[in-house]
Length: 435
Figure (cartoon, rainbow, N blue to C red):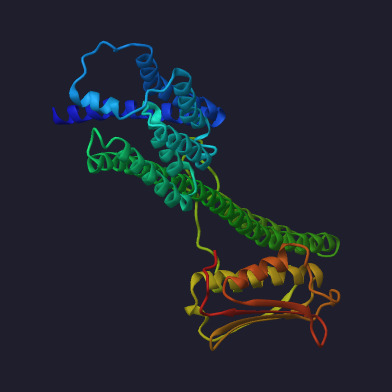
């Protein structure tokens, strides 16, 4: 029973609050589109509630009412103005309210001037409430540094009224009532202003957080695309280079040594299957299942330093002569560092196979010393120009990106004694993990 009652309460108040919020939002949109409508409505309401009773009284309504002593004393303290003068003063008090939000200070000054003129003539009008509305509007829409001046003017006006009504009401009682009313108008205006500023700050913060979220999503997407592109380049580029070299060697050996041609075809198949398996592993994490859930791919461990020997064996079948050695505690490296080393070596051997060709001798070393890990790949093939190779593609860029994750650098260029040399230096205290 308690659960049902709570659900009923939530269901009853939730839609009502939502409807009120939507209605308030529609009113705000309408006010921003036509601000003069609300200002006109406020001026018309003040006229109907506070101006018409004075006009009806001047016309004779209520003239026969019995007056008590207090009322006679109150009326005796004021001057009865002709209808034209009352209309003029009422217009001076009410019409400036049309500009109460666009020109709040000018509106307050104009109404205060008419107010002082009216009470200097000894007349009392219900339309004087417009001065409190103007003070409220100034506190809500005007500049805060002008409020002290407006408060001083308001206090002077209240003192003038208290002195004029002293024959009927005590000056201190009148001042207490009038100044309390003015303080209330000022406080309500400041409270609404503060509340609006808080809501505007919350809306701005929400919009900023949404923008930052979108930026983080776009950045994460771009980072993931770059990672996948780097992995795809490493996998496809290396294996295709091996396959092309084996295919060329097999085609050459078909006429002279058919058994070598058959062996080359078998190696091409093995290399192709290896590349296909790695592609499935990389792309499997991106594939979405048909029901909208992420499909669980068949995963395998990322390659590390222990796989470099197998990598070298695969490249040897394509015709390179590789001498590989390690120095230091390479097995103690974390998996991210080992993957980075493997991919750098893979890219360097792929470019050697592509540019230097079969029969090239390559010396490969991975050295762990002090706080650095150094990878050196040198071959005796032909020099590939004056500058680094593959500068426009993903090769050298990908190697540098991977090294930068560990505070490292990559250099590539012609060796002093001929051939080509690649050297990568990584920090063993990485600033970010490789992926």
